Image 1: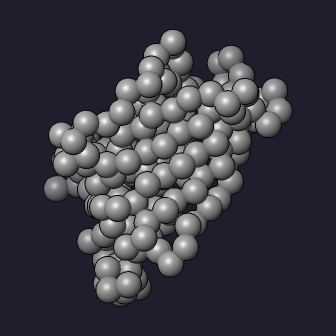
Image 2 (image 1 turned 30 degrees about the vertical axis):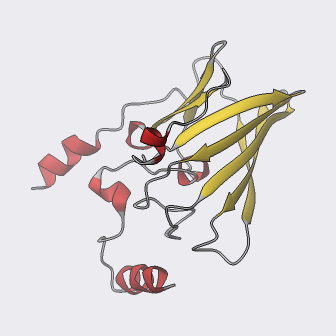
Amino acid sequence: MAKWEAISKSRIAGSSEYDYSAKCLPPGMPAMMNMAYGMEVMQNKNKITFFSELNDALRRVYLDGRKPTQKILDDPTYAGYSTGHWEGDTLVVDTVALHTQSFIEGFTPHSEAMTVHERIRLAAPDLLEDRITVTDPKALTKPWSTVKTYRKAGPGKDELREFACPEGLSEAK
């Protein structure tokens, strides 16, 4: 609560102190899945890769049964470490080892104990649905859930563009 209050006070004052994306840092998980920016999904036998246009954020979901090692758990990243499996037509994903300098959604902070559980499926031929549940016993009084939907882009439309954040920061100096 103290962290949330500090972030809230800073944002109300107009500060970008806690706006990590303005500092060219990745949005992190699950915020990456909540962005209005385009996203590309690439799949092979052993993994699915999500590539977001926002700050060129990258996330991999491993499908080969691997588990995070202690080294991975001790070195959190913005995207975290995601493993998944298929239950029929639904991709079930669990993400751990998430950097605490990211947000759940908007500017809602979390602790190092946060985990993200997702159920991703095609809700219609051109509509991907992601049911996201965040659990964090240190920062939340109960799990937080949301459902996000993504429209499939057609050929030649909505192609991802390079996000030149570092270039913009150097020009702003």
